[in-house]
Each structure stands twice: as C-alpha cells, then as structure tokens.
Length: 602
Image (tube, rainbow, N blue to C red; front, side, top):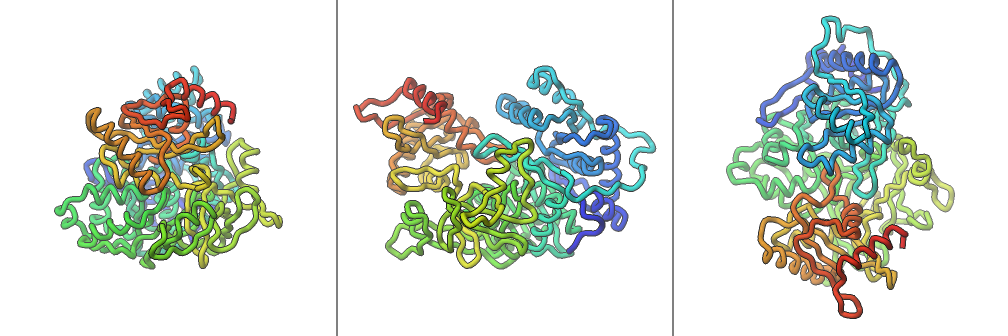
C-alpha cells in the first residue's frame, strides 16, 4: 500500500502517470448524473499546463494560490497544478451569487490572511470573481488565472516534474469556522502523505477498493479523504458535487450502486437525510452490497441515525457493520481515529449526570438517566492520543472526560501567520512535560484504547454546574418539535450580567408555516428541552429560513449565532424569553446591554 515515487504529491501523480497512464484516476458525476473521467496521464498533462501559467504569473515566487472552482475536474487540475508549481494551494469555494453578503466576506478574509495575489478559477467565473473581489478588497483585486482557457500546442510538454522537499508547504487548509474565525492550517507534503497512509491503513484500502463521495473538495474530509488518499492508494474514486447531493440525496446512493464503490462516507446529517427522502422504489433500485466501509464523522455520530439508515437500506444490500465512525480535524490533517471495515460499530451508555457534572463516563444502569456515546475507533500506529484536563493539563485516565490531545506525523505545523495561536494550540504539554500535543478543543474519553467523543469544549453550555453538549439540546428539539428546520438550529449560553451565571438560548430556523405555527414551535422547544434535559431555556428564538450562520461544509456556527443574538441581529419570526427577577420580559434594550457586556468580556 506504499505509494510509488518520491514522498511528495507532485512526484506521486507524475509516477502514476508514467506507470498507469490510461488508468482512470477520478470520475465526476454531474447534475444530470452523467459522468466524465480523467486518467492519471491526462491529469498530469493538465496540471503541467496550470503550473506553467502559475509560474509565468508569479515569476517563480512561492506565494499561496487560491482555488476558486466549482467541484469538478477543473478543480483537480488547479490543485495539482499548484503542487507541480511548488506553490501552496488554498482550497476555497466561489461565493454564492444569491448570498453574497454571507459568503463573500469569508473569501475576502482568506485572501487578506494569505496575502495571495493569485486566484485560479474557470473562464465562466473569472469576470464575476474579478468584480466581486475588486469591490470587497477595496480595489486590490488579485490576478485571476482561468485554467480552462485553450493552451498552445506545446503546453504540457515540459520536462519531468521537479522533486519537492517533503517538508515544503503544500496546502493552507482553512478551518471551517464552526467555533472561531477561519484560520489557515499549514500542511506539508509529508504531513498530507502521512495522513493518507493512516487512512489507507485504517480503512483497509486494497487494490480492489474504489471510492464514491460527494463531500466538498475545499473541506478537509473531501479533499484529503476523497482526492489525495485515492491517489496515494492508487484506487479510482467517483466524485459528486455537494449541491447535487443536497438537491437529490438519492443521487449519492445511485452513484455508489452504479459504479460499485466500496468506500464512502459523510457527516451524520447526510445519512439522516437519505432515510427521510428515500422511497420504496429508491430502495428497490439500489445495490449497496459492495459497500465495505461507510465512514461517519465531521459532526456528532448518532447511533440512532446509523441504525435507521441500516434498516432502511438493508433491502438494498447495505450492511450495518459497514459503518465506521471516525474522528479527525484539519489541524491533524484529517484522520485521527477510526475502525476497520466490516468490524461494526459500538456505543456505550453512560450516566448523563456523571458525564455532565463530574466529567466521568460511568456505565449506566436500567433506572439511570443515560446518554449513548459512539466509539470513534482506535488511533493509527504512529498516533498518540491523550485525554487531558483542559485547565490544569493533567493527563487523565480511562473513562475520565477531558480535552482530546493528539501527537502524530500528520499534525500540522501551525496556523498561517498566527504564532501565538499556533503555540497555544500545537504546543501543549502535560504537567509532567510530556508533549508537544495538538489541543483539539474537543471533549472525550478513552476506554480500552477506543476514543469516545463527548462534545466540543468551546461549544459547551454550562448551566447550574452541568456541562451540556449543544448537539444533545438540538437533537431533542429536532426529535420532538414540528415546524423547525433540521440541522438549522443553535443552542448556546449567554452570561447573566447581574449574577454571572450562564443562561441557555435556543435559536432555530422556521420551517413553512404561519404565525400560529411559529408560536407553537417556540413553545414546543421550551417544553421539549425542559422535559428531556431538565434545563428550562432562558430564551427561544425562531428565525427566517437560511439565516442561521453555517460554515462552508454546512456546520452551524454557534458562536456567530450567539453573536447575532446578543447584537439583536437575528431575523426573528417568533420569540419567547423568560421574565427577569422583577417579572419583566427583556426587550431589545436588554439585548443591547448584552452586546455591551459581550464586547467588554464580561
């Protein structure tokens, strides 16, 4: 399973093009579900053309280059063209023309952060990108290279690709921004290939394997798991745009069935969406018996989602034991822990109160309130996993809940031009001096060498001494309440300026309906959260559809939803808020005071 050639991504593609020129490397399924393919030799040729254009534009300077492509083969040529030119690639995504106010600022922030003067895109997007960027960047528009423009007759006929030092910067992988402003994670060729090796080993990839994914190529899971790892392992992969999947979820499963994919994967919400949308005719027309491994990660892994998916698509040949819960993050390149194919998945029931108030994973008995936590498998052979107290940095033992710390060859060098944050995040040491470790910001515990993820440290809602995972609160709402949009809610805490205690706020986008239905949804959230979690919300807000802030990969940005709530900037359709100690319901003036308190760090 070791790659051919030298230990860098440019040499790896070059060697595959020489040894397997006519082998299909990537297949892309379009909106109409027809496919176009590219061989190793053709991708090599197109990457050389892009590299020549980059070098001519930059005059050989190794400045980062942004990739602004819709998912497809042009994106692949741009990515490997950067590798061939020896410049760091910055995967991004074109702003949505219908939501420029929400999508363009993030892109502009990335351009400012990288200092990049070069943007790779396609000829149909270039004029729009030039206008948008000139407006957003106060007239300083980067130079755009349309990589799909016709090349001269000698283009792509250059000599062999020069060797690149394994430690050279290959990617700036910007974090999704689910809990903070996006930061550029610096990844070298060696780190990327090390993580590809871990994925190939962990997922048991073999010569007969093939992939099938719709994940965004500008996101770490889609880029490293769906593009770079198949190249490393020398297996074909069929790709699809996430837009196609969101419009027609069954297109993903038809793709797996049609092309016989053995490996696939997605976040939890995607499996739940397929269950909701599938008809009996869909199920009858699928053959998913070839799927050996279907990973689930990037957001909390819910046992009920896996069970429902396996039950619904069992008649299509899908096996429950194909599920592989895994854990990873951009700062560790991607993969940290996972399970072997067809090993099955397991969960443990722990006492909810002990988990939330005492930080211990105590096995739950029949009469105790419990929470089911899914195992995310074991770390790779070269990865050290540690659970540490996030305050004291003391290493904790089995079943103790703490922050997940990671040390592996795939851990990044740090954040681009952020030395202080890099030192804090990538240079953690225990009280005994062991380290350095990557601080993930995630909470979990280890039992018998397996990792169980318990929540997000920065997203914790702490009410009356209880540490609540906001995803648990949101799960209750979506299971119990009508009139709200699934995966479009945010639970977070705000501080009581008078007493210094935290108060729970739940914000959700409304589904269709009138004012009466909106009021019923707000009341339903109040009752469901109070009944199921014994935590009465301080405020419940229902907003207009498509207004809850999300990352480019679809994760809810609770920190931004909290900021909008405190600033009074939510597009509210209905609201309930608890009265204060004098029996008064706070109005916008109180929210203004909250904003002042937030700004001063109170």
